[in-house]
Length: 82
Image: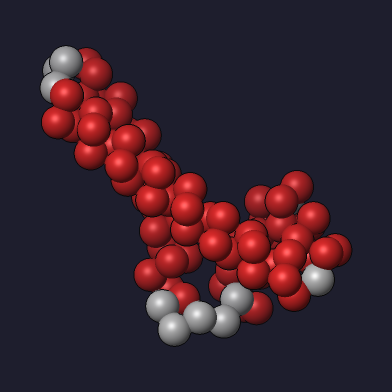
């Protein structure tokens, strides 16, 4: 077990969760219906994040939310096997 890889993966997964929540909160601020759709339907969350979400660092947040969780979980899994 490699604790450094597991810790890095957990940190990356936490950052991805925070980025996902950041977009979700913006969807709820826009409209309760959009927020509920984004919460319950991942494809609508993706649509909202790409086409309706407005932020100075939009693409960094969206890419972190999408890829961060996948890379973080893969790092945790690989670190646990070493």
